[in-house]
Length: 302
Image 1 (cartoon, rainbow, N blue to C red):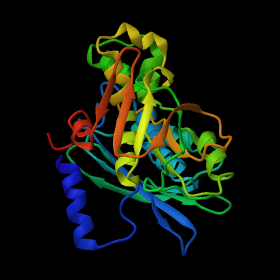
Image 2: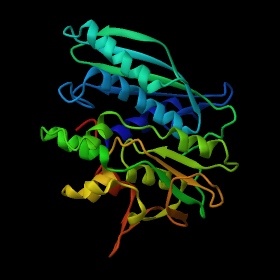
Image 3: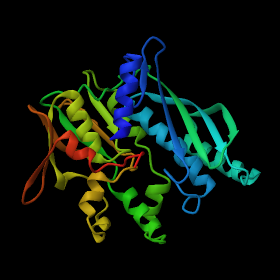
């Protein structure tokens, strides 16, 4: 995967202790920082998504990273690169959607606007770590339980419907265009856990998050597929199990935490000795290495 190769090159050049998780934890400042970009015709299409939905999702994907770090999102800046056909109404609706995603606790405090040949949105989010324990994908331990929050595969179902020119069932369309950030689940964990732990969102798919945590932490995650939460109506789609496992942009959360921690969510498995991810189905099991998973997830440079 070129994306992961590029990140490896960047890490090698910078020799930075901060690069690795979705958020950089600046412990001396007590904050986490993240940045995500959405590019027209790569991450979204304007015929699928209106400006309000684009503003909402641009913010939500960054708030999800901050939530998964264990911190509390506080401030955002938004950079917009826009083609000449964008008008004032687009900007108004975009920022209404962004403001709606922020709720009452997060403030948009600045940004930038430039010209471009298509729409590009880049958001930087800052979160506070006070009274929270920040997570790392490197901190899963043998004996910990694997807990997930959110429904998996719904966003992929919504995207498939949009690609087919359909707008129903609406719940799947909404899951893709206006995902729900699992803020409360993440807060419950980070404000009560005492030990080191691992947590990631499922922006690149549930199995990607499981595999990343397993390989970064050096553990074997044994997962019961039948316990993974998903909307049962997704079973109407061909290859729906792959949508649950590999469909990205659900922005659920995977946490690998001590057994005794009472944090809500759904327990789907356990961390054991070994490396990689094992999926147990009703009639068989499938073992996934890091390379197996990377064959299935979205590649920006294809």
